Image (cartoon, rainbow, N blue to C red; front, side, top):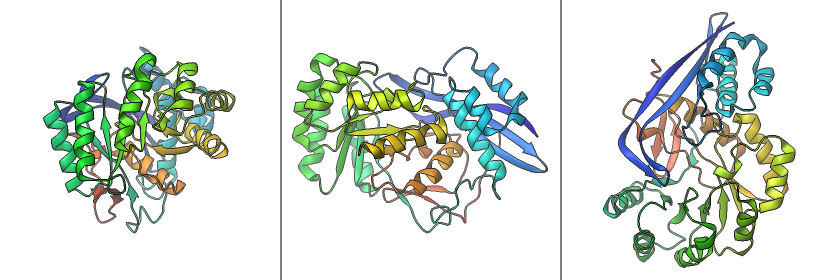
Length: 344
């Protein structure tokens, strides 16, 4: 068994804004395992400035993984607790190696092309006119759930956008989610949530920065809008620490990005705890290429969540890999008639 790695720089079709800045490129890494004539492909979806494994020795650790690939998926996962994107890349690569086809990791009615996953339509931050244009485009393309990134432009303008949607579509027609990416301060968060609540929102993701457990717990207790934890989960390792976080904050929802929280195994730990506490959850990609998005989508389908997932990011890049993944009428599907074109 041998393993190599490659770097790939994904290029956005259009600069994409978040409250942490504007993205023009997204770096990602691939582990490629070969054994007895078979190939396994895994994506290590490093997200600079957000991943806990955004550190100078990242490539060195990736090289170490390839040198020690014979240890196997489980042993390597335990050795990579500080590198969640590598944990996921390793898991993905081994599942790919063991499958009958490198890109069918979780065979199901989804991969057979007989079923789909409902997803939210993502509206990126930008000028008000640009955001409005995106909203209209998502509705035109059949999305029943729209997620707006907020926190970068004037708050009143963001409220105007929500008012614009609600003037045309009720909450029964269009579900609205917003994602603040920690943009609010603890002091102004509750007043802003009260103003947002007028628009029948489904939820708000990460209203304040992660790590402020007491403040977030107070918000979750008194909020008029359901709160979903996102960045809050990053860097929380081990079932005991995960359970403590959920018991302390008691959120309405939590969001899973497998590349940032330890891959399948790390996410499964969160799923089990969330189900125990009856906390709602959904899965979101972390801007991976279609390789990582494919692995996340196939696994997500097996979990049978009834909520729209955050898996519509495959069309963001000019140099993504051609794949059978398609976004149709507010869902993501896998078209087995289409081929993969994975060339690095």
